[in-house]
Image (cartoon, rainbow, N blue to C red):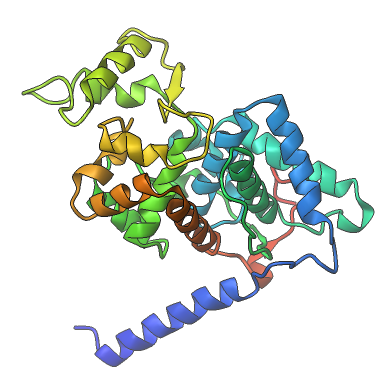
Length: 327
């Protein structure tokens, strides 16, 4: 049996480690070394968004997949080598759109073109700023981010398993997964709101509309009209690469319509719809469906908390010259 004193000391040391790692994070971290960092990144992101809308959901999703696996350290950016299969080549990361990676690369190039900024800003911080910017460019809130992360020194496909949410997860699984990253039930519901943007492959929803269980082929929590729409967009013999909008109502707008969709049975994944059918999360879904400002503020708070997960400091990280390689 674990001694209570030892357990308390262990928890206290873990708390101190977490706080020390996020202690270096602060706004205006680059005020002395690269004072225009925010504007340079924003300009690069804006240019990329003008080229393709996919930039927005791709960057946002990339950030989640990075932070949930060993913290926000841009390790998801690393390319595999002959000696190492990296995070990005794990099965669950293969669907990450190239536009997200390209956004960070383009912003890094823009920073490196400014002499006093060259190799001064971590790829992890660039991804954090770019994510904030795409949310705002899609009509979402504008907010300040904390900076000062270093880039991670490790990226392995083996480290990804069990760290990312699945489309079939229930509230118990989601809550447990987010809790491992220091995020609450409310954080989980708020961050799920990122599904107001983006796409998903048809194959991810086949089980809900064609093979739900032995009793019924269609998940009864899905709106009947929405089932018709989904079957039209995703026939069973469709190319598995075909994708559909996560939000069928306002797919290009960052807003609280995601929660309104859940109220109508129009959550694309099981992991979306359960937020409305589970009594623990339903009141929050109802609240944010009725008040977009409250959702925006909750999303900001949760994104800032997410950005503190697994921050690398000191000898545990560096600033990469190439975001896609250890150097």
